[in-house]
Length: 191
Image (cartoon, rainbow, N blue to C red; front, top):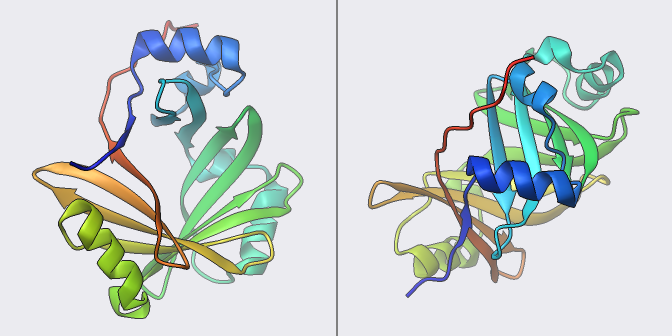
């Protein structure tokens, strides 16, 4: 049986755990967002909170940094993201038909990138590790690159029995994490 780390943004968990953990829950950010994502650990403690926002809400210094890294195209999505309580901004572009997401520190320094790639460009050992772990081929692949833009991990997304999964795999083809993406409704008091 596969061991999974659930992503469960349940309202009670979110409000109580985030308030005490410093993970980054803010009612005002939630009200400004079009949607919210949250990742939790095995005990349900929040690790990160992502507020999906209009790209116009991202600081100019981050837009400038993204355009320097990935010229052309336009920002098609954005997030205000807190990881372990630290604020980051993320912008997404579609360039050459592939999605590129970059996460930045508030001052415009690159933190990491997610670059969509074709399955054929992913080593067979990595693809096999995903198939072995979840019993299905990935429908989407991303290269995860650090601040120095070097590849350090692959993320695979897959639909299995009507459920969405994300599998994180190291360059050595060892699966480091499997999470299930679960939709949830969060009710936030209005101002």
